[in-house]
Length: 170
Image (spheres, rainbow, N blue to C red):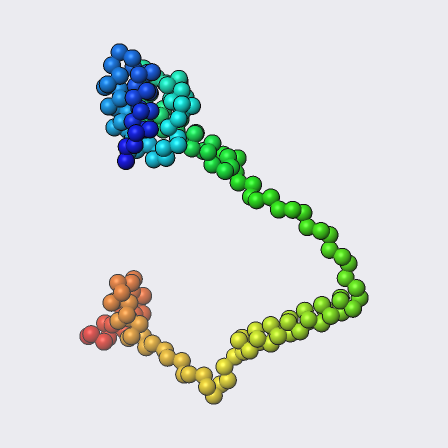
């Protein structure tokens, strides 16, 4: 949406950069607005001066010139400088921990040993092998089933599968 601050910014930029034909330049700048950042706070006197005086190859600022100026202004308005990275929030330093007493060490070691034993028991329970009596019978494919599956999938036929298929079809 083209707001009044953006339209006035474009008109002023046109007067500064193309004093002989500001109407044509203003129309060109307004046509660029939908592709430029939508934040109205970027269209200030500082960005106007920067866009009007930026180094450029043409007499009137191009889209690249204007978007570079507005992009720099947008980065400068961030809570941190994006080019240098985010340092994160600053937290107060932690007070040094007091040393543990021998009783606390024993209690902590007992709790850790108990948790480790529980985890090891759970892992052993999850990793144990199924007893022979409950184990299902393995199902093997016959050479004919392998050859038919290979043909159906379009895989390269092994010579022994091709021979099986030839016997089956023959």
